[in-house]
Every structure is written in structure tokens, then in C-alpha cells.
Length: 169
Picture: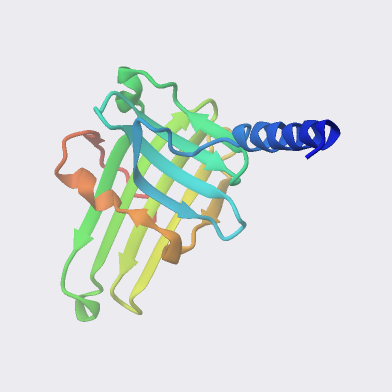
């Protein structure tokens, strides 16, 4: 290999490393995914916690860019989120359902991450609803259930979030 070819090889290697290191990660090395899914429009939603329960964080964006992250990584971040649920057993004949929500407010918007199951038709849904608190307009970003990792049901018993009483369906 000539010196000129060697320099070219080094240049390409550094360029590739630089480009790949600028991609943003939805899960940091000290975090674990609690709940995540891909949206139907190609975005990603993650709800992560620090492995030592130091903080809870929500991230939204593309695989290459985090577009929104809430809140900062502080111990008080847990108080920014609430969990609510409704469970009715009895399968389809009783219109059984399992509705689970984690929600938070940032600026003039309420964000509701949802995971629902309706026994009638055996419908499962994941997604995020964003409510403009000034106009009351709701945007529903539907997720792809097949990409779901984790479950919001775990928040019923883990004492990590305050349990609220708001339902959003």
C-alpha cells in the first residue's frame, strides 16, 4: 500500500467513524427500555429509565435524530409523569378491556403514551396522543403493535409513578 493510498484509507475510516458517532441513541448505556414502539409514519417512541432508577425519560424521533426528549435526566423527572389504567375483565361477552396510559405535560401540550387492548375484535393499540392545551386539538400518532417492546402494565405494581385517574379513550 502506498503512502497516498494509506492516507486515503485513514481519511475514509475517520469519516465513517465520525458520521456514525453523530447518530443519536434512543437508549444510553446506563438506561433500559421500559416501553417502546415504532410509529406508523416511521418515527420511534421510547420510554427509558436509568438502570438505578435515577430518572425516567421520553424520546421521540427518527432512527437518526431525537426530535423531542422530556424531561432532563434528574431524579425529579419521575414526578413529571403519571400512570393511569382501566381494566375490565370478562372477555368479549363483557366487552373486556385493558387501557394503560403514561402522560406528561410540556409547555402547552399534554402527551399521552398509550397501550390498549379491547376484547371485542381482539384489538391491540399503541401510540401517543398529543393534546394542544390551548386549542384542545388532539393529534393521534398510531404505533405499530408488532414493534412494541415492554409494557405499561408493569406500572400498576412497581410504585415508580404516581397513579392518576385520567382516561383518554
